[in-house]
Amino acid sequence: MSKITVPILKGMKGEKKITMLTAYDHPTAKIMDDAGIDTILVGDSVGPVVLGYQNTIPVTIDEMIHHTRAVARGITNALLIIDMPFMSYQESVEQAKRSAGRMFKESGAEAVKLEGGVAMHDTIKAITEIDIPVCAHIGLTPQSIHRMGGYKVQGKGKDVDKLLADARAVEAAGAFMVVLECVPRQLAKEITGMLTIPTIGIGAGPDCDGQVLVIHDVLGLLGDFRPKFVKQYRSLSSDIGNAVKEYINEVTSGTFPDDSQSFH
Ligand code: KIV
Image (tube, rainbow, N blue to C red; front, side):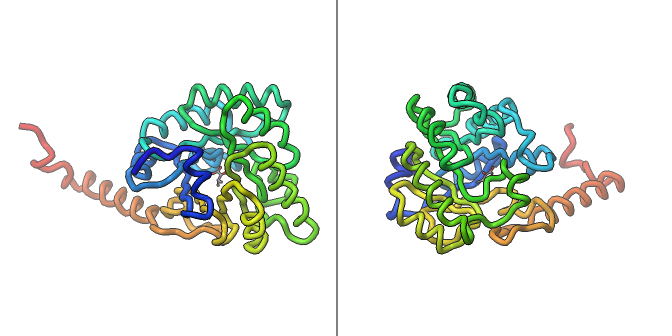
């Protein structure tokens, strides 16, 4: 497999589905890269998924850079995208350029992702004009969770026009790809057909140009709660729990370590 680049991803639209997963650490990133994933996102979901925060809002630029550098060291071929955390780009276009520049320079990421449509047009344009590729994110935008009143499907009823306008705005601003989160299947299909850039769905049905999921959801590491759009491919939390119980039993009963784990 060869190195995935922004032009390669753009060229995959309509030709081949794009695969994306989140990663937050070096070994997971290396396993995904070796398995042939197209693109890895260090999402600000690192906050709730890995750092134990309630949501993505407290995540900082330093935390994003710290995790992305670890992921970057595990990747050879996948395109690496870093999420811009809340209030690293909303203040002004100048602030957004400074934050994107620092994150791009210090993390090893090859693109940034930020949330918002029409309202982020000028910001996306300014960041792409300094040659930092931008992946947009519209529909359910978790940094707006309090305004939205929860993790709800977007683009229903009168919000259809707003979502279509957001999609057009991010493409016009120069985004190379757009994540559609929690959008009705039919609307995601319409947006995918309308845009020339790839759409990456999460809870947006099968007609997008690609799909993304949070790796901890895929592996079943987050306990029983599972949003409707998640497919859990493994159930590792019970495997880990059982391994830890075996270890405790063997240490307390004196069966680990035995002679084969000892030096002579
Ligand atoms: O933060 C994240 O992991 C994301 C993806 C779920 C798209 O934004």
